[in-house]
Image (cartoon, rainbow, N blue to C red; front, side, top):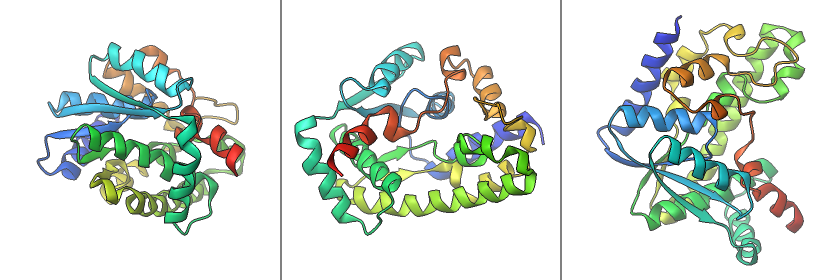
Length: 250
C-alpha cells in the first residue's frame, strides 16, 4: 500500500458518507485530524463551516481560531458558559445509560457541537474520529509497542469497537438538535484499507511522541500549517477543558 492509496481512500470515504450533501460542518479543534479533514473537504469544493466548542480559556478555542484563519475557512465557535455547564452536563449524563467517563465527556462535547451546528443551520457534521484508533494516535500505543505487532493490531481493533459504541451514544444525545454526526474514517471500507498499512507507518518506537506518521505526511502534502503537523495529540474533552470542568462536578 502506498500513500497515494490512502489519499484516494480519504477522498472516497468522505464522498461516500456525504452522498451528494454539499453543505456541512466539521468538528474542529485545529489538530491534525480535523484540519486534514477540513482540507479534504476544501479540495472537494464542499461548502464547509468549521465548528469549535470549548471554555473561553481553552487551548482548542484559541488554536482553532489561528488555524482556521491560516487555511482560510469559515469558522464558528461556541464558548461554554461555566455557570450553565453543570446543569447541561448533568442533563446529558442522564440521557445515556453509559457510565464511561470519557464517553460521557465526548457526549457533552458533541452536544455542544450539535447545538452550534443547529444555530448555524447545519444538519450534517463530520468528525475525523478514527485516525487515532487506526493509526496509533493515542499515547497508550507507545506503552504496548514492545509487545509486538499482534498486540498493537488487537489494541487497534479494540479501540475501533469502543469508538463505534461511542458513536451510538453521541447519536442518542444529538438527535434533539436534528443534526447528523458522520464519521467517514470509521466506515468499514476505510478501516479495511487503513489496517493494511504497516505499523511503522503509524508508530516507530516506545519513544514516539507524535505517531500517525503517514497521516502527518499526507497533511504536509495538503499544506496543513506546520504547527498543526508537529502538534501532539490532545483529546477533544481535554483541549476544550470539558474534562477539567466536568471533574469538578463529579
